[in-house]
Every structure is written in C-alpha cells, then in structure tokens.
Length: 190
Image (cartoon, rainbow, N blue to C red; front, side, top):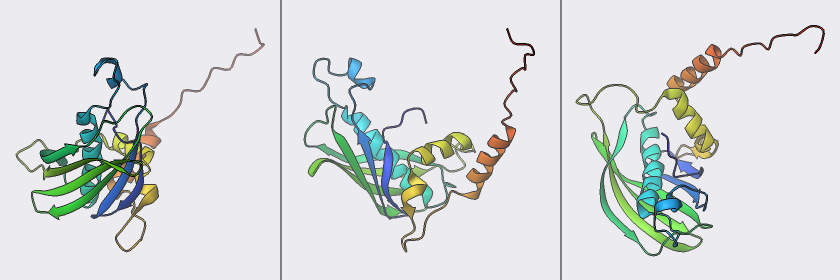
C-alpha cells in the first residue's frame, strides 16, 4: 500500500470496532493541486482513510486469509471540510459479515464534531481473481506495525490479538535474508 490515509490505531476490537486517527497536514501532496488557495482534505481521501480502517478491521477477523477490497459505498455524508491542522478520528463498526463480504459504518470526527458518515460494503475476493496476497507480506507487516494495530488490538474478551503466523514467518524470513555488506577496513589511515 503506497498511500496511507491513517496515521495510527487508537482502538481495535477484533470483529467489532476500530478507531484510527489522521492528522491533516499542509505538507501533504493533495493540497498542491486540489482546490488551490483553499486547502481542504478531499473527501475522497477521507473515504480512503475510512476504508483502510474498516478494511483492516474486517481482514483481521480471518487472520487476513480473506482478501478484502472495498466494493461499494452505500452512503457518504460530510458536514464540513477537514483543513490542515485538523485531527480526523475514524470509527469503524462492522454491521454484518457474510461469506462473500462484510458491511461497515464509519464516522469521522474532528474534536467532538461529527465530520462525516459513510456506509461501505467490502468483498472477499474468491477464485475468480488471481491468487495470492494483495500486499507483499513484509510490507504489510511493516504497515500494520507502523499503525500500532497490534499494540492496541484486542479480542472481544480483552485478550491481545497477535500477528498471524504467516506474517511472522515472512518477517523472520526477510530479516534472515538481510546481511549487510561489511565496510572495508583500511589499514594505515589516510
């Protein structure tokens, strides 16, 4: 995943609810071309942050065995723009899970003010699509660790969630294949 539209997880309850935050910064590229002279966070990117929050929540339920993709936005309402300096808080709640996908509702708040409300449907890719993970496992591990998902994640009964064994092994394999080239030793100085 090249573009991250969330900064970190604050809460994560497996199969139920996740809360993430996104700091809106003037240094982000979208402000260069989108609405010159009036810097606002495009709602499409807010929706992407909401989708990333809910998609990770839904994917984690199966240990990321299901390949989860955003399939449809049922409703999207935004009450005011997000501007540089704002801190968006996304709250994703799973409404329903079926064999072929899931539905979630996601809200965004800036402080105590309701900023946006979105309903999303996610699909689980089946054998009609090419097999394999949607992301390189090592990159995926780095991403969820950077977001702090496993630092705050718990099961519904409060036990810590753990990174699936497949991803732990992929990270170990990548670390084992890393061997820095030793610096040449120069005798005698200059």
